[in-house]
Image 1 (cartoon, rainbow, N blue to C red):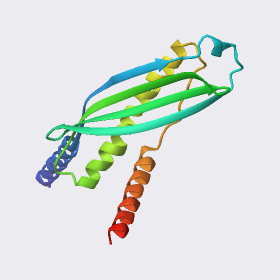
Image 2: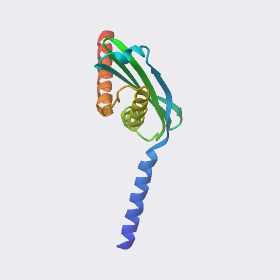
Image 3: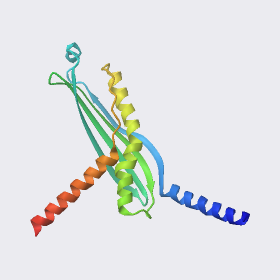
Image 4: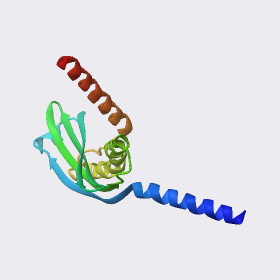
Length: 169
């Protein structure tokens, strides 16, 4: 009985190790940062009623076998009375190991949703710091559901492919 438990325990340990090897974070880093305040100092004299525009973009590049760079790009444009108060952009990146044994759909989900979820807190903090250093009121971004964003992207691609097939037929 004790031998059976040791064998089962070893098998569970190997399965856990294989799952851990299926995905790993190698490095997280800030790839690019940009901040502009084109209407300073005049913008500081206006009543602060901001209109925030936010743009998110995720891009991944295969570096070598099983290794990918994922870049989350966040662009925040804040306008006051129609004038740009500031434009801040952060490219937060990570290098991730993703096993070839994963199905294509799983790999796409990892790179398109899971990795951006890991990168977002770093990008949010960097963006908030940039805005604060420029003496604008603090910018606190709400969490983003990258799983829902990714699912919407997949659905849009499927619709486009279906429309393309109808046009070709």
